[in-house]
Length: 240
Image (cartoon, rainbow, N blue to C red; front, side, top):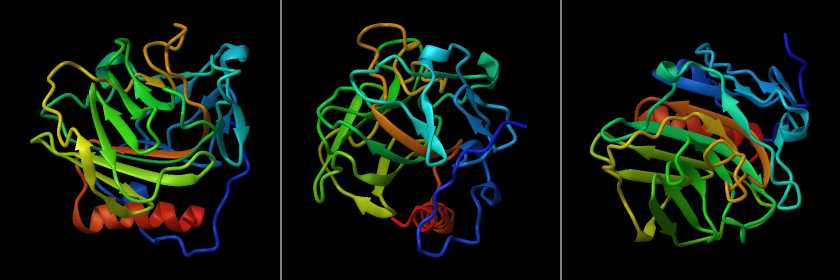
């Protein structure tokens, strides 16, 4: 078993429904559980671990998650260990739900990518604007409270089989005010790399800048009580 990092929990009550109690769980990088600098084990049981064997490309374990550093230290990234055929593919019409508790060290960077595969525009993550989030080459921008620099937050996004997006910050629905509200792109977007674009080796590969505390991915668009329970679990756990 891999060593444990220091997990962090907030003062709020944690939902009694665990991510593993909800159907179609695909990846669960769980805070403080089976995590060391070189590998964060998948707690979903699907074997989709985040792995980096090269020491100078490893993030550091911080508060039970991974601290990828900032623009001065851009090379940290991981690859999902599953065979290509076992990777989650979120191309249209495949549905998915992604929930991530993160803290960005920079919102002016074009980095802050959560998952990607080998091609430049095939990624999921935050873009330069503080309230913008991209999936494939589609970008949605929001109104309301900014997703600020050095702010710990939960971002939850769903895409249904019609391609429609829904976004939540700390469990509260976010309105899309500009950009794209859906993606019907049929080119592959396999969740192969974690914390970068492509394979993390190019100079413009948009490495994540900050801390990723926990990530949960489902191979369906959660709705109703399942979505509420997932958001409640993560907001309660991290005091958001």
